[in-house]
Image (cartoon, rainbow, N blue to C red):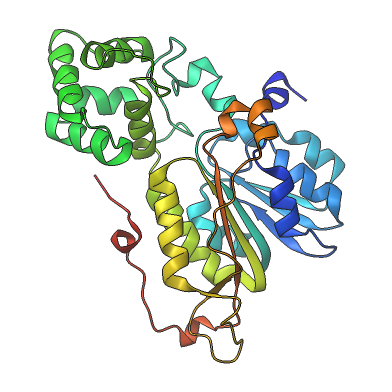
Length: 325
């Protein structure tokens, strides 16, 4: 196991296992494989199969030990969980017994300086989960001031978005903005560092990362896919790390699920069932061991018996709090 794997700590692992309750002969999806922490624990719990999906090819390569130890039960897909249905069909499966989505950027990505995800390391502006599409360098140096401001405002919920966008455009008129430190310096000139918990650059970097990797639309598509591929009583578990993600998950559950108390498998018109609307959070002990877990929120539901052919409602990204810049 590499240093990156050892450093990465899977969030709320005990809670995930308790809800998922891995069972022999069942099939599960880890939609955000990362360093494989959740997947390892699931495979240790039962003689089951796990499909590990990740956009990041580095993450796939870090899980070679899982392949070696569970070669007949572990399958990897280098792709997006937004294409969940296609991935499952390509592998020859039809229905899934549980899906885990652990959203956001992993510790190993944040701590890999060369990936350009973090303002704490001086690196080329990149922020791509894979090496396709536009990088942060492309976005920062090419988009209009208004487009940059919209991205920073909607995806970062940054009140100073207009000022930051203006400062970026003014700087790039002089020279291209090439590194994380250069971008961080521009932001700090607009928002002075203070004693608040959130660093002045956090929201802008988050916004760029979400936009570049299409994270919110991918999440939305994954939730829709879960509706299609989960077997009856199959569980959907989502761990989010910021309000935009959580809002989409919360609204999706609200619109498409019924409480367990009201659930009647013959009469329900909803595709999911929830036991409680209460969000689960990491224990104080876990937060002490892994500070990055402090903002995690876990929500889960299980699939009802409703056939998609009987589904009356249609989905709309904006109805769940999704925005597209």
